[in-house]
Image (cartoon, rainbow, N blue to C red; front, side, top):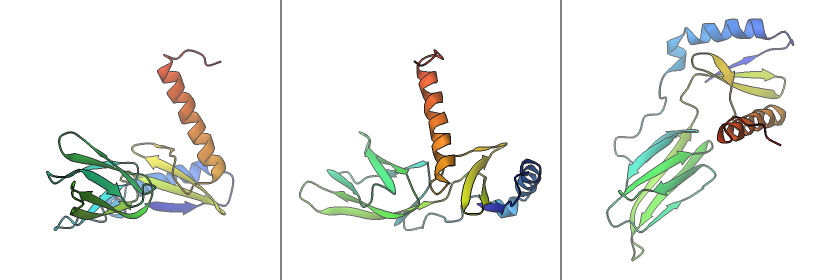
Length: 169
């Protein structure tokens, strides 16, 4: 993740130049900074992404310690799909019908996997996903106005797509 600060309102020119420089520096944008542990005790998931975990055969109940950080859905094939929701750590517990814990895995939610540029204007923050072009990204921690504007645009776009492009009334 990369951050830049701009003090003037004329930011598009310098912004694009800096973004180009960042994208040209692959060492600064390493792929996965935190590998999954060899023992399988910690599951690393990037925010806004999902990962699958094979559950023990006798699993009857699946518990996520903090569903604000990650969520899990059990598939009929005995696979749990873990979806990262916000940064932090929680755990995933599989229990059988008698209440015996079959496993207890740590879930670590880390930053986005894509190339991200964060623009700070004083205390205001905006996040852009830069793969291959920089576009606005909805990210927890962005300035409320920026976050809400992007979320509303995304919601309107989704409604238009579901309605076949018909005008909403």
